[in-house]
Every structure is written in structure tokens, then in C-alpha cells.
Image (cartoon, one colour):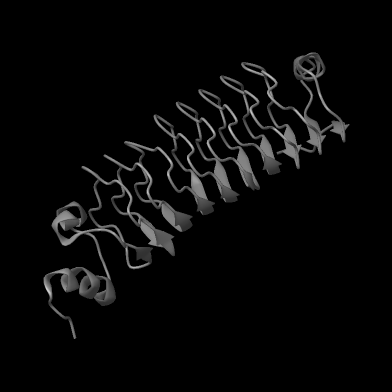
Length: 228
């Protein structure tokens, strides 16, 4: 990502200001600005950086955000449906209930942020990095985590039905009470995952996965058996 050429700082921005800047073709640093409920759909924000901004209720639906970055933003309810976030980064901040349906997250990274209740349906996620992300109650059916290494990702109570975790490594993650109907875990390493709330009768979904002796003992305890 190149350095931004222009700066918006410490102000409330209107659609017309942002749209005009977008049409300039230059990369902007938008720092500590408010864009509450502003509709910025289908604009071009290639290489823009939004830092410590308030984006609550704003819409970037269908926008081009390639190599863009969001740093420590307050973005509850942000609409990113269909946006192109290829090689973009989300670092820190609160993106609870964000709408990312159909977004492109190819070689993107999401780190150290809150995405409780986010909708990740139909996302294209090749090469996505997830690290220290709170995805409790998120909606991500049919999401492919195949061969990914997930670090400190909390999927508690999330909709992960028909997801693909084959060959994935879950490091200090949580699948507690997640919905996992028809999800696949062949060759996944789940030794670093919280499997709380998963019943032994559900373990057919984990066929071929690696679990720890402690995890096995917890599951077998449901049948009144002990592992030594």
C-alpha cells in the first residue's frame, strides 16, 4: 500500500466531499472523521486509509476498497455488501453487525477487532488472514476456512453450517455452541479449540480431525466414561 497523498482529519464528512475525493483517483488518509449513515456505495477507495473514524451505519456497498485499510474504526452496522476488499486490512475497531455479504476478501487481513453478529455469507475469502477476531453470533454459512491457520478467533454461537475447515489449524479458537451442520473437518487440527457445547453425537462432523486427550475426555464424560 502506498502512502496517502491527501488527508481529511477531525471533521464530519458529507457524501459530496468524499465522492469528489474519490473521483480524483488519489489515495486519502481519513483520520478521526465522522461518516455516520453516509451512502458511499460503488465509489473507488483504492489504497485509502480510514483511521479512528466513526463509520456507524455507513455504506460502502459495491465499493472498490482494494488495498484499503480500516484502523481502529467504530463501524457498527457498516454495509460492505459486494465490496471489493482484495488485499485490504481491518485492524482493530468494532465492526459488530457489519454486512459483508458477497464481499471479496481475497488476500485480505482482519486482525484484533470485534465482528459480533457480522454477516459473512457468500464471501470470497481466498488467502484471508483472521487473527484475534471476535465473531460471536456471526453468520458465515458455507465459508471456506480450508488450509487456513486461525489464531484466537471466537466463533461462539456462530452460524457455521456447511463450512469447510478441512486441513485448517485452530489456535486458541472457540467453536463453543457454534452451529456446524454439515461442516467438514477432515485433517483439521482442533487441539487449540474450545469445543464446549458439542455433544458426542455431533462428533461425526469431526471425522478425521485431530483433538487432544483432554477434549476426548470431556466428550466421553457425557457417557459417564473416563479417559486416563
